[in-house]
Every structure is written in C-alpha cells, then in structure tokens.
Length: 353
Ligand SMILES: Cc1ncc(COP(=O)(O)O)c(C=O)c1O
Image (cartoon, rainbow, N blue to C red; front, side):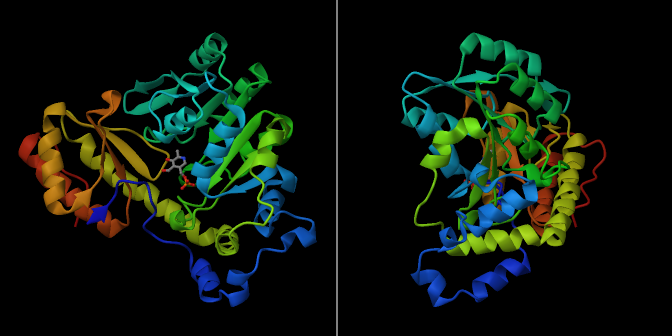
C-alpha cells in the first residue's frame, strides 16, 4: 500500500540522523538527561534558542505539536471558553478543545481562483465579536495549503495584545519563509506562541518531537509543559542532527516544490477539477462530486491511499501528500488513466513516466 494521506515525508531523515541512531549508547537508554546541570532544560531547546535568537525559557519541547496543542488547550481553556480556528483546518484542534469542554468557533478561509486565503479584516471583526480566549492560525494551513503573512500576523498582535495567538507552523519548512521569520515576533509580542515540528520537513514523525517558541504571556504553559526528568534523549539528539543537516533538507524542500507542480499541471488540464496552490508538502484538489466513488475505487484497486473527507465542506475534496518522485509517478499514472476516462484532458502534462 502506498500511503500519501498523512502529510508525512517519505524522503526520510538526513544521514546524520541515522548516525545518531547507530551510535545510541546504553547510557542514553538507561539514564535521564543531566542537561539541567548545564543550567538548561535540554541541549535541543538551548540550540533552537540560539539559532532563533531567543532565551531558552521561551523554547518549549514537546512530544509532537499534537502534544503542545494539548498542553495549550488544557492549560488555558476553561469549559465554555472559545478557541477560534480556520473553517477548513486540522480536525484535531476541535477535538482537543472539546477535551476541556471549550467551544470552537471558526473564521472563514476564502477561495480565490485556485488558492485559499485568509482575510485579515474578517478575522479581526470575528475576534471582536466572539471574544475567543485563543486564536489559532495555521500557516501553511492543513488542508488548504495557504499561508498567513508576517505583516498580517503583526497587525493581529498589535490589535489584540491580550489575546493568546497560536501560530501552527508545522509545514513552514516547505514554504519559502525564513526559519526565524515569525519566531522573532515572540520577543516583541508576549501573546504569541509559534509551534514547529520535526515530523514534516525533517521526516521524524515517528520520533514524536516538536517545539514551540512562546512569549511571556504563556508563563503558565512554560511551567505546564516542563519535563523535570528531561526529554526523550534519542529524539532530542536526532532533532539536533536534523537541524544541522540544512543542505539535505533544503534539497528535499526543492524536490517537493517541483513534484507538487506535477500534480498542479495534471489537474490544470482536467475539466471540473481544481488543484489549489499550496506552500506545504500536500495539495488539496476539488473534484466533481459524482466522481468520488469511482475515484476511491480506482485508488483502492491501485493500492494507493490519499485523504478523502466526509466533512460537509470538504466532501468533494481530496488531499494528496507529495511523495518521492517515484511514488508521485505511480499516483499520477493512476490519476491520469482515471481522468482520461472521465473528463476531457485538454493537454496531458504530468510527465509521469
Ligand atoms: C497543522 C498540523 N499541525 C500539527 C500536526 C502534528 O504534528 P506532530 O507530528 O508534531 O504532532 C499536524 C499533523 O498532521 C498538522 O497537520
């Protein structure tokens, strides 16, 4: 089975990460970290603080961003309070808010031709009306692939200095944004937390490791998320090795960007289909609703899984994770055969050998 449904990175981690794994010592397995003796929480948070130009206390390590999101919601949301999220977004946000009996309210994400986009004025109006405790922005957003600009983020932070603003940047590594772009704002705006993960660009989803950089208004979170016995020593070392393998990940990012374009090219000539521009390692495609069953059957028969939705807004959408070139060729071939039987393809590109 070829799984292109969960936004994983099939290129795998850098060779330096495997080196860490090959060199695991019994001591790494047996003992807790003693990084506290160096006056730091962990070498990983110290390194991240260093590259981002922040204090180590503002860098929080977690068991994936999933875990940090849970910390945030459990730490701040009381029953009946509101978390505001994009109307198309990762299902987990609503789930984790519901764990503490909080409510989720949505702000729209609009379609402009073949892109999704946030509307800053609308978000501001809705925040004033709904008074959420936390505003969550995902950039790039899953599943729509669009980003939120630094200028608009600053505008929000200026407008709502007391509102907790959480920016989920799980897919930032696939965009053309600088690594220290929005995290720099944390020193200026105490109410911002930026979430980053090693699961996506760094291809370490199985390691379950992520970090957040959080401003001073997140003091309770800094305490809440602290792990006094240290973090997973192996995940930490792998994450450190990954951060240092810049060249390797830069080349993966470039390949994913060009592979993403192969899908854009194929769908651009299929009548009735729209592939949406994406800054991430996936893209969302809208299809004629009556093609769904047949498409699902065809993909199942080909042993390929991509992400179809049952949610009302996304019923006629599918999200495709960009795989390796060979995996993409496999899927593009199946899609091209399917499409050519159902819709006029004005000019087949896709070049799927
Ligand atoms: C927007 C978004 N944030 C966070 C995550 C989860 O990241 P992690 O693997 O670090 O828990 C996902 C997973 O798909 C995601 O789509």
